[in-house]
Image (cartoon, rainbow, N blue to C red; front, side, top):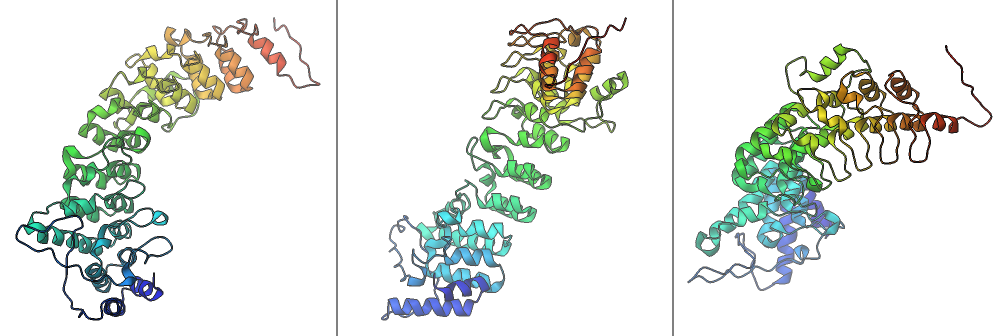
Length: 453
């Protein structure tokens, strides 16, 4: 790109830019007179019956296909991203007047495939966004006797290399007014991309905690709004990691999302399980258990409670690795969810669920050193919890075996103080927890058994 053109575009210098373009146009066609007339082009569209297609004005070499920045941006990209004052708007109109094809031309690979509209929205240049859409709207009105009809939608739905529209940029910026403007122009814009096609504007708004924007997208997009997220996720997967309020709203809008899994077969409950919800300190008291199993002190339900109400079958759905939500919760140290799932009013049967390696949640907690979860299970006097204290996995290991191997003294003592835990069970290698403990004694040290009687 000519450095003079680049400088004028960045500064919004209309007089300088127009002089450059008119001079280049005159040099390209010396026998033609440059006049200030807007000529609208629509590539691939035929003229209306009885009308003659407008003759294309000569394109100044300053705006030809090779006239880009090192990042692959055209002059219209530069102007759109640089400002939205009157000077910038006049520059944009002048560039469009000479090269209408630049309106939705994507930048080269270095520029991420953005159109000028992407750049304007990303910069928060609302007036420039309106100017660019006016150009598209003018094409709709003037082409084919006013029956073009889809040019504005076409420009708005253009996606860049990340499969995002200008609406994504407005959402990411957190500009609610710009989001509402784009949605008012094209109410179906929030449906892009379709499910499985990438990250939707709604997913992006939820993940960035832009709750008001998420509500605006649903309000203006209605039933056609896309909930799609990356890797097969939905907006609900993002909501459970953010807040109970947004989780509740998403479920109100589309309750069926509760049962949808991502590319790894993880449901939103798996995601919630992996995120500890303000876990309290380890305490085996019945008071702690009652607190864990009850709603929050303010009467507001947690995301996990909302999910379980929406779909009670979620605790019994494994992910792609064969892990159930209770296994994920145990691995993450999410004691609140473990206690909630084991509550007699929820699904105490979860205690016996085995993952792909034959492990219960107690095995997982002992292996990961989650002392609070191990202590909770070891102190639980109910039969459902007692039944897994000596459960063996596919390798024959009990939770005590795994605690010894992990060298987790806290989990070891939590298990050992329960008289139901057996020390004589051998794994598939014929080793008991006591045998394993001997093998972990550092070289040069020894121990002896003491009779406490």
